[in-house]
Length: 181
View 1: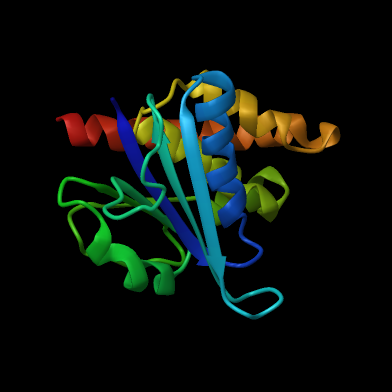
View 2: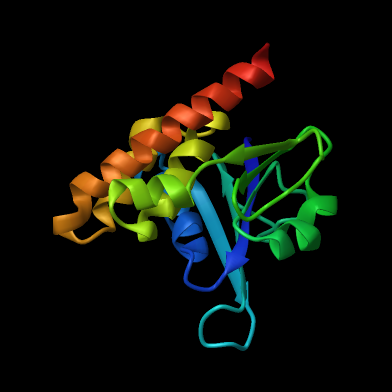
């Protein structure tokens, strides 16, 4: 049995839950695994804290809660502060370079927001982070994650989201190469 625990955290409106959903759908629809996602968020309508937890397994998920994530993706300093201590010692922390500062050796910055702006829409920053995580922590084949990401976006944004995903993949591959060196 292969069990993977992932967590995303940030603020409402950053696509935190969407990132978890994309990986969950890739696990279930493409890899034929079992997956359970939970989400939590603050009482604010937008802008409050947000968290998505995903447990994926090649077998039945018998315990659905994330206890020691192997990866944490953060889009806010608050998300880092809340969850860093829960990440496994050999885990991976990815954070948006302009929003998250960290000196933890597990931390790797990802340029998502400014790159999304350069691509034309800040909203695709989460597609960049999805690509970065998929490449840096290759649990699922990149094509599975890409397929489910693009299946969930409006048709007129497919090309933009694919470009954003590929930008994230390039950053994730650089992180992976650094980890393997």
